Length: 201
View (tube, helix red, strand yellow):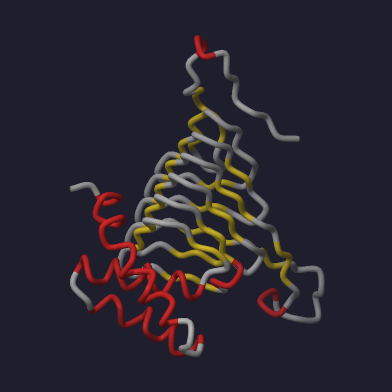
């Protein structure tokens, strides 16, 4: 049975648990997220989904979150349906983070929606103000393992970000991006469909 079929079988129970969790204070829900790593694989995935429904700004259906995933500022996270976030990823939604439907994020990937400034020389860089930059991941995107996606980046629909890439600029739709910093290396749009990768300004 596919994961999404299993989800739809269990959906009424999962949504009931998620609704019950709304009465729990956020600090306790965050603590429960941490201890969810101790649960066996399938119960852990189910419980993290319910907690994500409680903590995120919006969370769709059939969202798989693996063990060791850390999510900062989940109240600024919007996530669609049929999304998988695999083990040991780091998502910092301080500057807002939107993940559309049908997205797969491989293990040990980081998404950081802010960056430090360094203009005030009287203070250490770590104490300088930060600048937020919303990250948006389009529909049907595959992000390989160990990718770093930086503040202000948008990744277009149906694109692939190759393993180990560091993404500092927008990625158009329908392409493969790879490297440090990431650059478009290939189009994956079928010319017979009449589509073209969407460019960003």
